[in-house]
Length: 115
Image 1 (cartoon, helix red, strand yellow):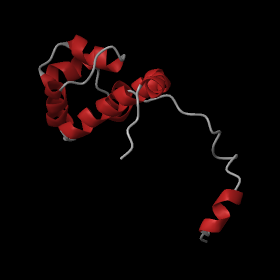
Image 2 (image 1 turned 180 degrees about the horizontal axis):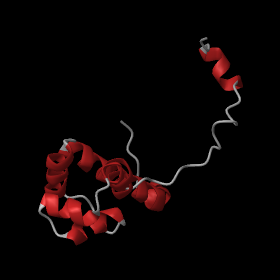
Image 3 (image 1 turned 120 degrees about the vertical axis):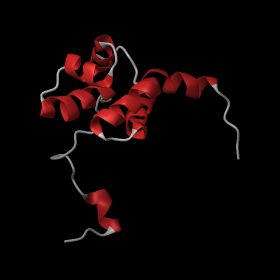
Image 4 (image 1 turned 120 degrees about the horizontal axis):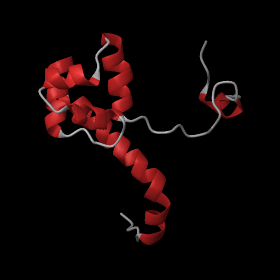
């Protein structure tokens, strides 16, 4: 079954979408739920395997520390997922937080140039 482009405006999505924005998902949440929990890894065990202080991992997990390039490379080595993936998660999260906090103020303050 396919939907014609003309019909899109007439479709009721209320059963699958509320229209509310979701809160940004932190890289620490993804690290914990998608990588550590399935392997039953503690933050201490991961830190030892990555040769980093435990507080680096716990800081990422609780959202008080960003994933740095060094940490991204170590996560790549530990899980086989590219450092770019980890850096992208952190960058996306930082941008989503900044947009929520600053976008309206910046739009009002900054002059937009026509191309």
